[in-house]
Image 1 (cartoon, one colour):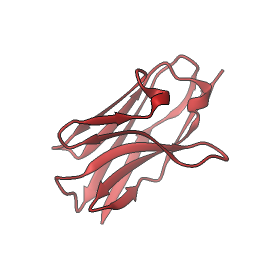
Image 2 (tube, rainbow, N blue to C red):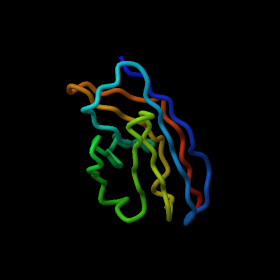
Image 3 (cartoon, rainbow, N blue to C red):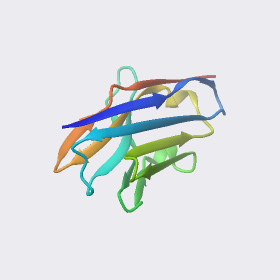
Image 4 (cartoon, helix red, strand yellow):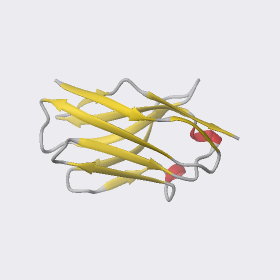
Length: 115
């Protein structure tokens, strides 16, 4: 099992910045993917950004150039720096780890961007 604990999030005005962090514990394997998803009210959960152990990243088109994902393999953490936030970025953000095709989720943290 893998446990994920998120921190960060909150309320920010449009154009502002926020950072999210997630620490993984438990049966952490070296070959995993870590990332962030988000879910806005009435919408499906969607991938925001993901990163492999070797630093290869993948971003949703809507956040490219504004968000940056990073990870610390020694500490089993993944972070998401969000800049130039827009009201449409408002959602619950979930930390995610994928190991052997199993998805693990954090409890979610609210990000609200006011216009």
